[in-house]
Image 1 (tube, rainbow, N blue to C red):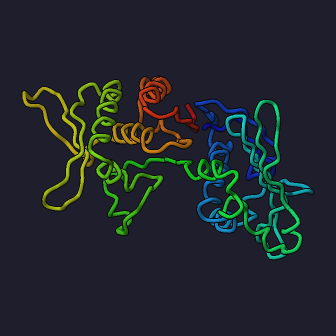
Image 2: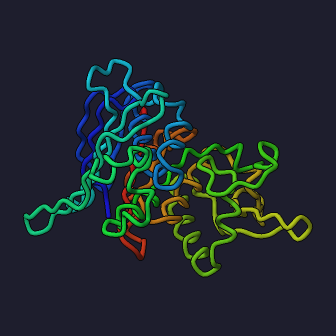
Image 3: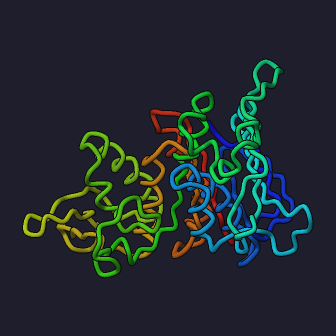
Length: 315
């Protein structure tokens, strides 16, 4: 499944935008032009499924931070997404008297053979009897979303990555508490280590082949567990002037090598849309030019369906 169209109204710095999407979407522009805010609309739908509407809005600073600054009446924030030109999901909400989000419209449509069926349309008669229901989306309610559970699972599978090499190298110094599925890469080496060995080794071989475009002297990419500390480490062999070359772990990788490696791993780590924030940071312009083809080539090696990628970039 892929997102084929996104419409945003009164979302952050977007008054009204309607974008058609393909398998790979590049959002190109300078700082503060709205690239990250566009991605965040998709992250928001994921967070609504996983944490609820109130929490998804609160973690972004509340309704004042989410709503377009120049919004006029009606000032509803709206996100509409088309998936595979089959499903259409729309959510509109505004502030109530307490400044909390309150749903003004939610709908699901299903299209097949030129026929569109309304699967969900809110507010409905139950919402009118109990307006507190409008504080929760149908995405959050398992007893309501049975007929469009595919959409719920799809939104939940959206993955965001903005890799910070410093966190990958030394996650404990930044946060002693263990992290899970951290978008900045604190648990990335652990994720690789905990992947079943057969799958993990196959992925690392393909990533190693792709990495040689940027770092020709790199080989034997693997992950090993330190016998003393029990901590897993990425290991590579560097071919250089020394006759027996040399092995290094992630603590010695350059920022560019570490960022590229972790981005390529992200290609395999889930099935839903992958949101990448400025993956060209720390990379040479010659390598940056090859990134789109590297992503495409790796995607073709996936055994499962093609994975959609959204990439913000200033390049």
